[in-house]
Length: 564
Image: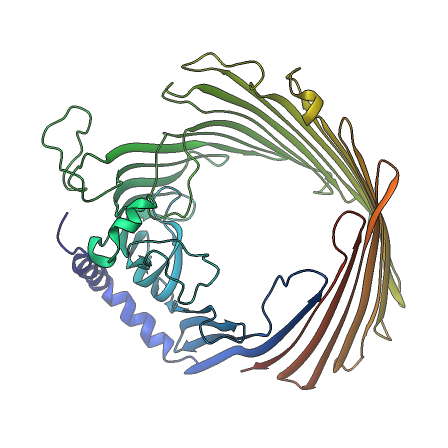
C-alpha cells in the first residue's frame, strides 16, 4: 500500500459519526443542561541537588522539572491532559523532555491527540507511544477506533543533542496507523484490527553509518482479531491472533514470484527481507462459585514482530491452567497456575528448551486482627537436543523453588493503630547438570519483622524493623544484618508533616566482616493554604567496604505544587 491511508480513516470515522448523529444530538442537548465548565488539576515545579565524595558522581547536579496534570469538563465532554518538562545538569545541551497528550471523552466518543499510548490488541497496536491523533467510537454495540502518528523519531548516528549519555539509539523516522472495527459489548465482542507502519528511508543522512550498526528502514503490516464470547452464564471463550508481514529493509529487492512468500499485496509489497509470521492465543474461562478456572494456549512463531509494540518474546508456545477458589465468604483465597512452555517451534534451533512452571498462592484474612499469605513457586528448565547434539557440559537442567510466608497482625482502638508483619522467604536454585552444579547451585534465606504504630489524635507515628538475609553458594556464604526505624508526625490541622527515617546493615562474607551501609532521610511538608503544597527532602548514604572505595552520597530537593 503506497498511498496515504489516514484520510480514509477520517472518512470512515465521519461516516460512523453521521450514522449515529441523531442520538449524538440528543446527548449534546442533555449535556448543555449540565454545568458548562469544570476544571481540576495541579501544576508543580521542583529542583534536585546531588553531591558525592569518595567515588565519581553518579548523577548530575542540579536538576529541575516542571509538571502538571488537569481534567477539563466542558458540557459533559471530558478533556484530560498532562505534561512534564525538565532539564538535567547545568549545561545548556543537557537532556530535556516534554510530552503532552490529551484524550477528551464524551459518552461513546473519545478523541486522542498529542503523545498517546493505546492498546488495540496484544499483537497489533500494543501500548507503543506515538505522537499523533485518533478517534474511538462506541455507540451501542459498534466498536471503532483509528489512530495515526509518528512512532519513532529520526536520530542520526552519533547524535548527542539532548542525549549525552546515548540512551536513544540511531533510528529512522517511523509513522503508522491502526484501525479497529468490531461489534459487541465488554462481555462479548469481536474486533478486526489492521496496523501499518513504515520507516522513512530519506529521514537519515548517514545511512551507511546506520547500516554499520544494523539499523535499516523497515516496514510492517499486521492483520489481527480480538474476541470474547459468552457461551453461557458460567463459560466464556477468548482469543486473539494476528498475521504480521515484516520487512527488515525497505531497500531490498521486490519478490517477483516465490512459493515462500505468498503474501497479499494489499498489506505491503513483499521484499527479499520480508517475513510472514503469526501469533495466536485463546482459551476458556469457567466461573462456578466458589471456583474460577481458566485454561489458555498461546503460540508465537519465531521472528514474529509488530512495530506497534516495544518488545515481543517470540518462538514460544505456552499452555496454562489457572484455578482460583474463594472460600468462607472470601476470607480465604487459594489460587494457582500450572504452565508448560517450549521454544524451537520450527525445529531449526540447536536446542529445545522446555519449562514447567507452577505456583500456588494462599491468602487468608481469618479475623480483623490476623491474616497471612503463603506463596510457592517452582520452575523447572530442561534442554533437549535440537538440530545438533548438545555437549553435556553446557546443557541446561535446573529447578528453582521459592517459598514465602508472611503473617500479619493488626490492632486498632480509639487511641492508636498498631501492625506487626513478619516475613520469611526461602529460595533454592538446584542445578541438575553435574558438570556445572558446583558453580551455580544457590540458596537464599530472607527474614524480617516490622512494627508500626500510629496515634490517631496527635498524628505521631513510629516504626522499627529487623531484617536478615543469607546467600549461600557452594564455596561462598554472604550474610547481611540490618535494622530500620523512623518517626514522624502530621499535625492535626494538616498544615505540617515531617518524617525522619534511617536504616543500616552489616555484611559478612564467610563470617568475616566485609562492610556496612548506612542511610538516613528527612522529609518536610508544608501546606500554607488549601491549594498550596511545599516539600523538602534530604537523603544521605554512607558506604563502608573492605574491598571497594568508601563513599558518602547525598541528595536533596524542594518541590512546590499548586492545585488548580
